Length: 237
Ligand code: ADP
Image (cartoon, rainbow, N blue to C red):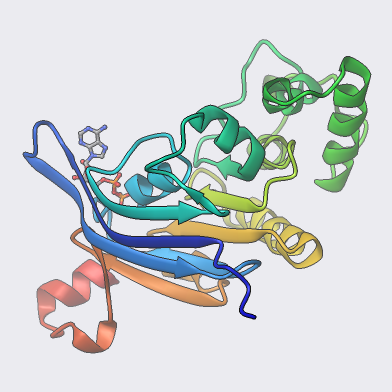
């Protein structure tokens, strides 16, 4: 029997501002369990919107979306779904500045029933996994950009999600720190079998993926089907 897909999106649409802005326009996507898929396309083509829908941070206007066995149109408790199944890493680490690294990593654990001591121990373990052992009590301002992003990855892993979403995770880092973050995401995926969907407008970053999905104007495109004129060449570069 075939394993169920991790993500099945069919014909998703999403508009903003009373339909004036069309962010997704018939986007379909299938991602297998444990697969590493890169989503590429020019700025504004709908990549972040797609990740937000998968993370249930927002709802589609139409279309179907099934993630980790959950039909998101019917899911009642979206925050529990997100806490249980989804880890997300953004371009900016979004760490809470007044909390230590360890406390930041513990934040998502409050949604699930971890006890205080378990939370602290798990945060320590996760910070070790991302190469930040002994830095639990440091605040974000005491860490470099790459280290903050690694704390954000540890936070994304807090609840052992089956699906890890990364939205331009290296966008604010220099190339060396960016490479380390990508190495880390790849290692996590390979060792834990987590499904990884990484969005980037940088083809070099996305080239690490096992499979690339190209987006243009709110939907997936088959590059063979796109007539390559000067404008398209710029749009997909
Ligand atoms: P990408 O991640 O590929 O750069 P986005 O998904 O961020 O693209 O955006 C797709 C389109 O939707 C863009 O035109 C963007 O300006 C618009 N958009 C995204 N989020 C919002 C929002 N919250 N309100 C209004 N427009 C938005």
